[in-house]
Amino acid sequence: MGQLQRCLARGEYGQLQECPLFESDFLQVTKSGDVASRVTLGIAATSPRLELPDLLLLARPVLAPVGGPCCCRCTQRLPPLGEELELFGLLPLHFVRLSIHDELRHRLKVRLASGRTFYLQLLAPPAQLERVFGQWVRLLYRLRYQRPSAWDR
Image 1 (spheres, rainbow, N blue to C red):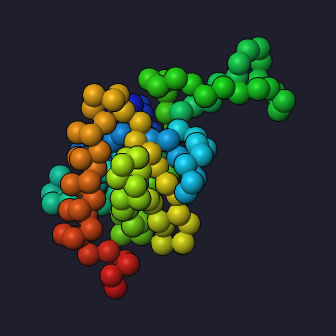
Image 2 (cartoon, helix red, strand yellow; image 1 turned 30 degrees about the horizontal axis):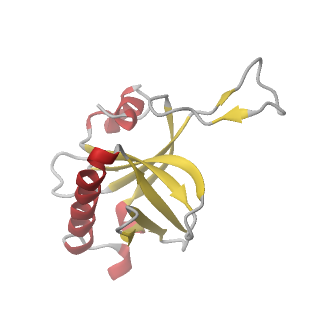
Image 3 (cartoon, one colour; image 1 turned 45 degrees about the horizontal axis):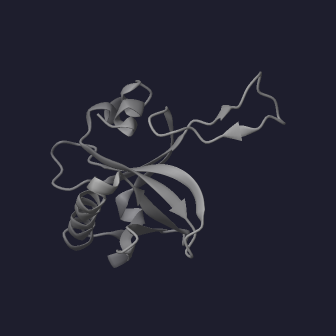
């Protein structure tokens, strides 16, 4: 079970607890490649009867203070992989366009119907990087060509 699946299993998200979910950790990067933050991206089917996923989930690591009680001036650190996540985005996939931005650098482009665009670089162990990115490429292909979206209407 991945980190995002564990986050959903905590009970706050009702029907999403048992949904099929494909997830990976990414670095959110600028178009030029500067690292902005870490994010976990998940693609889920909200019903087992669906042939294709219909929901994009975004989660980020819970930021914890470096030491002492937290106040408005406390310094925060980025937690290592494996710490708790908080869900900050649930978007129907028909309002999202996912594509490959840079295959050599394992980057995806996420464009929302609002026009906002962000870039995600896969964060995986080197031995698994090609395999996991290949799974994302196949999933994006299926979503793009086998599912009508708000973009095509």
